[in-house]
Length: 238
Length: 307
Ligand SMILES: Nc1ncnc2c1ncn2[C@@H]1O[C@H](COP(=O)(O)OP(=O)(O)OP(=O)(O)O)[C@@H](O)[C@H]1O
Ligand SMILES: [Mg+2]
Image 1 (cartoon, protein in one colour):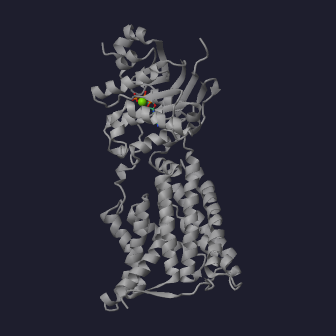
Image 2 (cartoon, chains in turn purple, red):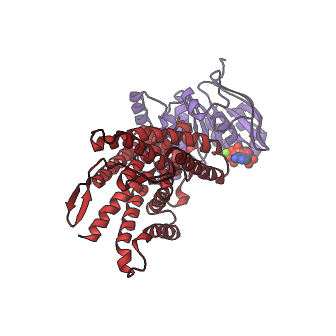
Image 3 (cartoon, chains in turn brown, purple):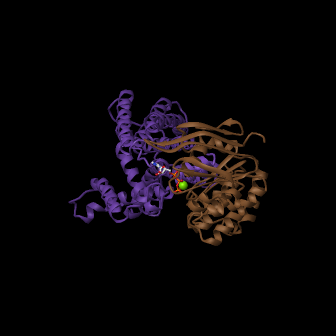
């Protein structure tokens, strides 16, 4: 296999004296949908924040397409093709839906392609098209999640990081969101999906990493994880 | 003469200066939640730089408004450089510090600038040469001078320009996004440090114009002139809802009008017990009243809504 698009070695994240991530290794290859699952407080969000430049790693190495990306500022990482849909969505509440989507393409200047991507996002999420003139803060939780994903897609990233996109959503909305994630992955985008809803994530992904107490405790194909007794007991409620 | 109409005109003129200064406070607060107490001193520096230029160019047979425009054109870059330096030196290193630290830093900068200005321009009140005629125009029962008209027009133009910049341009969208959620704005590719610096540059440019206008209007300036003007403009920003641009514009105009109506009527209403010199007290009483009755200001959002 060729070199991974994202290669993480010995990543550590510290909050003052607390070490939240204690030496994580993971690889995501071009075109893969990989999931990172784990219980509350396992360190999933901290890992993603470090990858996206929101937190400076205390140790370790992050390579994006072979280039060092650890400690690089977020506004530069997006220009290297990395986008994060943050936990809790992070839409700009007092910007309209359309303005939020425009912000997603802030780092780009290829006007024609941006317009085409906007059509594509509106095609995926009709609701966003209907509400394009509305302030994002007035959207429902599910609509905000659509907006957060659509906004990230507007950056045309090569690697899309998603932090618990199903959090707090009704089952129907969760299905809709997961269908979109599968779709963009099947169209060739590389995705790293963090989820607490392990069953859902394992059904969508090709490979999985299981995180416990700041470390990767286990990793295998998603299929194998679904059948693994340890994963079933701890994360699938069986 | 119609006192009401006259005081309304005077109030709108004074209020539009408050509004220009209030915009500087509110923009900085909106983006880094800091009350930039040094902003009044930036206005003062703008006024005194303009004064120096106007003094040098007066009596040379140039057009009066041309001389004032020259003052503005020199004071704008001077104030922008000053605002940029203040942010770099006094605020940026403290961005992650407890909230009190940058506030104290702001007060320190404010005192330092006053003393520096005293060294350059002295401690006496300085008079602006009268380069423009005070031609009065009659407007119903009131009189409006050419200077007043120019102040109103300049302020209206700048506010419309700022509104366009913030609401309709890519830079403005990035500024609003940064104010609402700086971390996520960074994820979108916005260089947050640059947006913050830009905010200081814009606020300082407005301060330079406001300083020149206020000096031209009242014909006096000195190193302490920024203090009261700054406090009034801050009051106006809080009145309108701090962090909100339209709020700063509305608050500024409203404060100017209320003060001037107060000055016009206080004496009569109280049988001369309280004179027009109490109009400053009126503004700060209003600040207290607003803070008690509507802490988020007239157009401000409930603070919980702010991300
Ligand atoms: N800003 C912070 N300051 C101090 N400790 C933090 C901070 N953020 C997270 N932590 C701690 O770091 C650990 C990992 O948190 P993190 O948010 O990465 O977990 P998570 O796997 O995303 O959990 P969840 O599934 O609940 O979102 C937790 O123990 C948490 O309390
Ligand atoms: Mg999390």
